[in-house]
Length: 317
Length: 322
Image 1 (cartoon, rainbow over the protein chains, first blue to last red):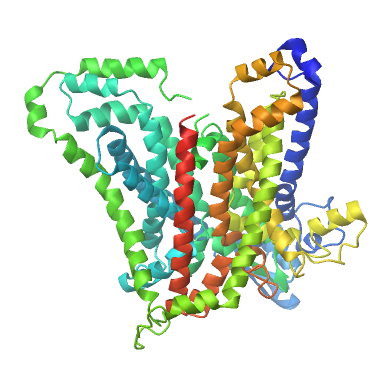
Image 2 (spheres, helix red, strand yellow):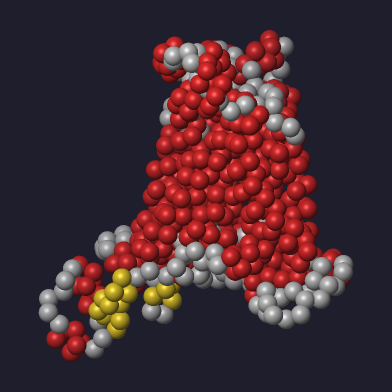
């Protein structure tokens, strides 16, 4: 192999080495995608198709899973169903074929909205606080800065279940249990540590000379921060915000322990979707697909900053 | 990678130039640097004190009592160190620790081997490597709870895709084994899902490590006629090692406190064979409502994670200097 390598350059891999590497990586990528493709195809199956043996690869697609996800249905007699008028929509029609009628919306949509509100609310707060603190740490001599930064990071490393015990008691006292505000504050606290570390890295990269020039020109520190530093840090702030959003969107441990009704988010709700006589896998597949699509979009947007995000800003390529 | 492009730099310089000198207003309205530093940092510190440190202190206090959260009006009695004594001599706790240790060990071993191999292959820079890298990264961005839930579907005996694929390749009857229901296989079922999900994480950090090795070292080795095998073991591996360590440490911390994925896949079962530390804690604290003793357990986990986090930050700083 080294002979092929040296034919071009010492460090540029040879053509065969590249081809073999490429094939292996593509095979791995395809295998790793199987579970995701399977959950998506399951969302388009009818309940009987989803639990057939052997598993069906070819099937007639239906939106039944999506209908079941968004509606609640009740079983009715054939006479009653025939006495009704024409079905209102496609979901109604599918339900009637199964001797059921749609009686109302399911809880999926409110749970999805909770996820949105809590994720965006906590991200906004965490990035806001994180930007200020990161600028403070980046530009000023803060006493015990290293210890404070370690303290900030260590709060993120804590096992959520261990933190949840006192939070549960505290929220019960303060009336914050099962409220969106309570979850927003909690996720802000978890995310702010990541935000400070990531944004400190981004702000460190902005040359101090810009601010100094602005200060000489008569800007105050605050003006220099808002008019010079913030516009330069936009990319970093956006990347940080997406990381915070993804965390809050995906979080489960706190959500399942501290929310049960009004403020419940989608992750603890999705596993509870059941149909008649067992899990309604197409509905679960539909719920999962809708829940994962935003993450796929964000991952693609973030791909250049992923490494930075997962190492708290330490590794930058 | 730099966030400052020449265009942005020019714009900033322009903005700075346009500013009218106004020394007086700066003196009047401008806060001192010291005041600004504290003004900017303190909200974050206050939030963390309220939502992390105050509860932590409360947990320490509860850990010396017999408090039960489902009986707020019952008399609370101080029990001294008894909660800690009981925990450290409780066989169930040690079994949970063993389950956690073996889960952490096997999942990280697999992730490191596969992750490093993938990074090495991607570093050959074949055509389309950027696209396929992004595809490979997808699993680690997903919600562990949602992932655990749909793997539960894949692991169903008979109807599940996993059993079917295994039977397709090995000829074993697909309904002859249950990944989640059998005492022997359940620990592996969580290791497989964790590996599927987090190998990309290790891969991404290893890739950064491989790319940090300067070309001239390989050129020098080539001049010295070092074999590719020799180059791999005496250049590639040692120079990427700080990065591998970083990935291993971080995954170690994360898997040590693993909760969501396991809770949905097995819930700690069958019996308590996959009951990792966080699941035990959840059962004790939120099902048995033994708040006092579980607070003591939480403190023990805190201390362990805090120690690991300390080592992790040192490793981070070492990598940062590269």
